[in-house]
Length: 501
Image 1: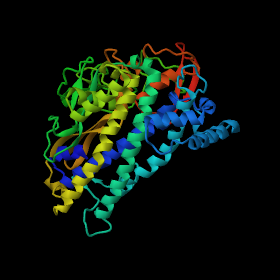
Image 2: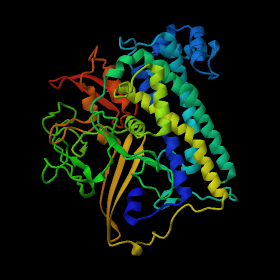
Image 3: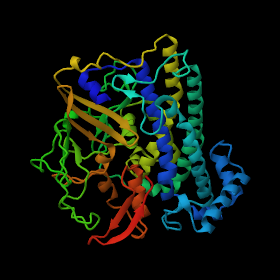
Image 4: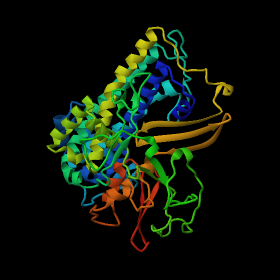
């Protein structure tokens, strides 16, 4: 949407801006909780070890860190019985893909049992709270109510089919439930588990370069380069230097295909996405999962670079840029977590730092859902029912040729779309998604992407059970295919790791 709106110089109405913000925020909250419990927790939590936990001691542990009601001895005993049935059946279902008993697991049995209980609760919780997307976007995922120039969902206090007082009340109820789980389950769990894995505060850093496009505009006529206008400030951090947030210049973004299965006229040079090309040129092995020669082309991902620097994007980048920019609530929450862990800010540059940053970001957004919804209600209450701008819908009013850049922050990081409109048609379109930044191959200068750099120096106790590798790769919340192959230096497959995506 923003790419076309930028090309045609369209400003969206207040109601559309607020609804977009609310949709994005609840998506972040749900997505981050799902990531922690259902996509990443089993890298740290030993399900089978939970069978030896004392339910009474587990109850004492849970009550010591939170007032969450599901914390009784009988509750945890019931969860333990459910786990036992999984294990004894030999069909572990959702708990099948992990390395139970691996020496890298450090949690005591009671912490494992508590985490498994919350894993199961989060399954029901996320299904419930994402009903907000059904109200505002018709479905989840792939919402249906976005329009260039605003939203298609009507706003009318007197219509049952529109955003009205009843739907506002329903949203507030869902958001209260979302915040309660984040505050009393997710955050306490992260703070309880992290001390057992403090060695991971020194592993998985990678690049030390971070970028965020910024997002969630707080006013209608916003300047994206003004940190007061965006909830997530825009900027770039280089070489771990939190004393300076560099302004982001989108003209400095280029993509390389030197090691990608695409072709440019000159593969050694990068192209700005506004004039980017996507010309497939597969030159890899056949079948495709045999040994890949990384000195040549070896991936379908391009290599995006900012001012010829590899960049990390995502929750850690956003929280570091917010922290370094002096975003008040970000600073408060990050400092509170660091104080709880008795750790300096430098621990954020790590695998554990990504886990903590994602949690901090979730707390930040969960706090804002109610006030942003009330802002929407108050704007409607003033009689403003505008939801989209229609003046642009006639192509004859468009310029003969225009270019647009659409930017946003997805849960996984910076997402950019570039569009070239000519004679009322799309002449060129390019996108760089977050996992392309983080998972990029080497570029023409041999610079690594974030995943690759973060894995250097990672200790692996057992190459056939590389849970340590998964910890760092999963800390980015990668959007990737559902199978990862681990090969030795000669291209021999060691193991095939099935991951939930």
